[in-house]
Length: 476
Image 1 (tube, one colour):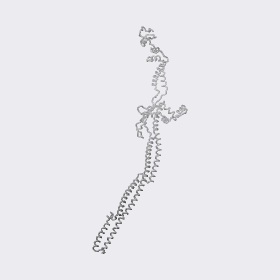
Image 2 (tube, one colour; image 1 turned 90 degrees about the vertical axis):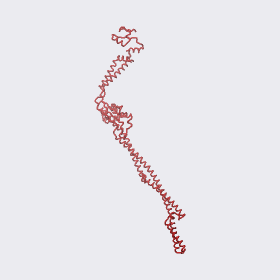
Image 3 (tube, rainbow, N blue to C red; image 1 turned 135 degrees about the vertical axis):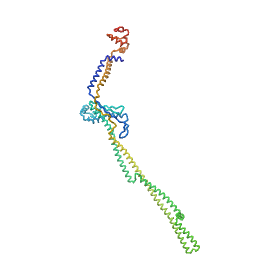
């Protein structure tokens, strides 16, 4: 269908188009005047997603995700926020609302859920595309009620956000508190076991006793080595004295024996002189011989005493060596026992340290959870509270009339075309060609004046070919 055909149809059915436009205009006018006036109050909330958390001290990564703002919009439209609004405005005690609920649901279901759904129908949440601002709008026939509802939703949203943040912290706080109690009991028991073990064994956790006993063991080892050397030396001297009593070092180096031997040598020289001079029977000779005999006895006694001390010294050294070796073995066993006790104490000390470390960590998390459960501050701030609107937001008379005119025109045109398709008529030359599928040779015009002829000329160029008078028609 060409444009000229559409124009011809609209000209032919202009009454239908005009009637529909007038009807739509009148309906819009009536509805705009009859419908109650709606007032819309709007409040704005800004969400801070870049500031660090006041408790944790870091920016939470979940706030940076694109879905965070959409989640906040869903939270604003949730029943949780609506329930807080109902509680804040005392709508639960409104008898009119309860009567409407009884009539609508016959008392079935939850009254709060029904009111929340009813309030949500007039609520509009509009997040900003370029920023983190959410606009909360509420529409009502009462401007004051719309303002109160908009501000109540904003306050309820902030409160619900704080509750959602504090509730997990409270739950975790209870969990950490129970864990801290259990760990504290286990830590106290472990410390008691360690203290009792240290008291029973006399072992200190600082290993001071072990160090002392180790030093004692090293000292005994040194003494045993020294005694072994002294015993070996005493044995060698005793063996040497057995082979030659007068050739030992102590005998040769003894000053008393040296003096006695010197004296005996002098007397022997004297006796030789007396023997030559007086003979063996002379009293001086006999006295000198007796003195030499006494000196020899003393030398023999002193030598025997010195050589006898070797055996005694050897026995003493062997006894001391045996005693020290016994003490060394006892000290070694004692040190091994102390090491075993220390290993047992080390296990208990590690248990205490591990429990202490776990308890400190749980206590730190408990403190953090306690702070979070008491922190009512959120990352939300009210950018603008709703104020009572001075003008109604709907119905908008001029907009409704403009839309009615446009829609009435569209419906009128479509209706005219639909009627034309159901009742097809020939209105232009193109219609004849489309129906008969034959070319047009001439047009029979019904006209009574020259003006109509001139109009026909303009509309049909074939008119000017072979026509002498306006009333003559082309031959068929």
